[in-house]
Image (cartoon, rainbow, N blue to C red):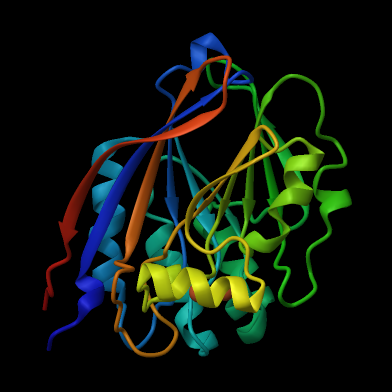
Length: 267
Ligand SMILES: [Fe+2]
Ligand SMILES: [Fe+2]
């Protein structure tokens, strides 16, 4: 059956920032968001995305929430598949994970060896230079606690923040996040740019898809891989994103290349 979610756009960006240290040049982060495993995205679909990420060997993977649609029985198969990711991986939960069963999700991530950063941070000091990774829990379900998440963050280390709902990104930038990775919006799924921009303005939605510069930091909103409802996507293809770090005086996010992964339907 035709399924528009099977064509995944892979965008690779260079992220230039003064807090990226020289030894971190070329460090790569992959972002997977809004899998919504269920009716349209099956474990076999995700296995191919995971294989693609593993073959490309990023140093870090950020999972930015909404692993299922509405069924808690989909949580374990989704997270088990994500557990096959070879690089160091961190996760935050999204609104759909809270609407289903956050405890099941957190337990499944623990079993998969993937820490859930629910309003907390970790310092990774086993790479070329230390990196602070901060996870902010879901804002839609009122679980975000930015103060707790950034409690131990400070200093000159590059700071990566995982945060499902992009509307709170300015507060994260204020706290010292240099690169904020979000999802949730699906790029509206039906994205007709002029109309979507007009509608977003009318609705007061400031951050809806792609990169945004915020006071010396960058927010990137990934369009996600799946759909909680119908699979149709117009002008908002499913997305997998890679970020390559580079030091530089002026923050910028540059698109280096766009590729396509055609996910095959395997029996
Ligand atoms: Fe979502
Ligand atoms: Fe969401």
